[in-house]
Length: 349
Image (cartoon, rainbow, N blue to C red; front, side, top):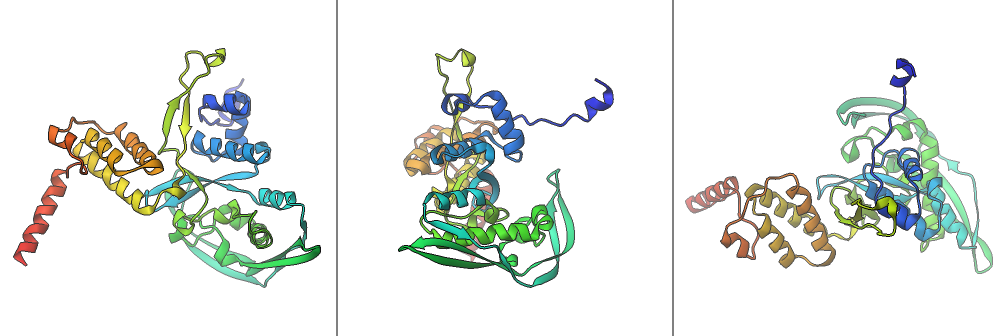
């Protein structure tokens, strides 16, 4: 192979394949490679793909047809992006079709064209913020009509969706710049959102929001949805002794946390616990406190966050009083100084 050919070979992704992929889903390493490099090329963690596999398995869908999308969404409570799994518009149409009472859909009806200039920041391929300005023309709104058989009659359900309310922003909620897909396909993306809205109107119990609608949104904008975070998970080793292929291996099995079930107050309390623990190094006291303070999935979330930070922060042995205390780990020297200053100011007042 020539040097030129070697330099032009496509880059491959290195998302490790957990043992559960073959054991529970019967997928080979080659199939996993297709999922990571072709079907979900932007997935950051194996957990995101595992959640998509679970969804498709439960719904009896072919994951290689990409019925779901992995959408990164900003979590203000966690201060970072988390990976979420949402059905595609194709999957929502499939759900409606399976009811046996879907009676078709009209072509989209478009509103007048609007030309507008968008300015703001976006992240490039190197995760660096860049300033951008783009002028584009798009339809002001779209209306899609979906039909359903109700009481033996074909009934119409029509919803209007406005472009400026639906489009995805490249820089999150604080940016006006549309994503590359909305710039490239301003009508096509809006049509998908219009279809999803009308399908929800016709099939409110069966259909939910589509990935095309969630792209560019934040977790604070929604109250439902399957949310996973690959950075805040437990890994449990599970190897099938009968499978020679995994003998001696320790492939982890992910425990996925559904953040839609974690109350924002709990997320805030855990974030404060992690911050103070990292500053004081009182890891044992923090774990004891978490077990006393939280229950169920809240406890799982708290322990996962502590595990994540404890793997990168130096662990200090807490004092006996810290270990036996049922309260939150002690304040750092900086926090203690700030509290003392506040008390002094309060007394002076």
